[in-house]
Figure 1 (tube, rainbow, N blue to C red):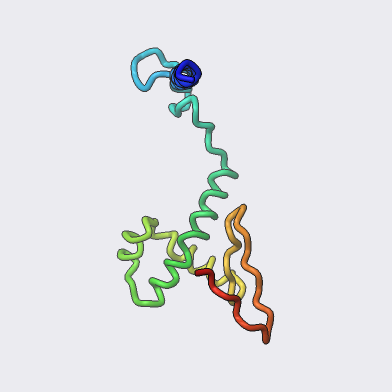
Figure 2: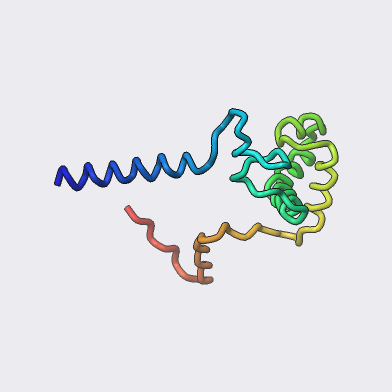
Length: 129
């Protein structure tokens, strides 16, 4: 049993070292870890569509908070500091909030199971103890 555990640990360590060494060096003048664009070899270049998707995701995440802060009298500088946004993102957030249907609730993340809707007139479900 000790032999099997030792073999498994040694194999895992060897794979870890092999995986780390295939990603290139963090410094030095070999040039193996950088491309002509200056980005690392492991990171794919960001395309226009990916940047737009990331911006839309950031707006969808931050805009409800920005809207709440605006309705509660926060200044733009306070919002920019709290939400880590640029000045031009605040009007974009207000437009995003206005474009949402009344009572909009964002969908749950992938893999989440939605709760069952209660049946009208049925007694509440017992709580587990």
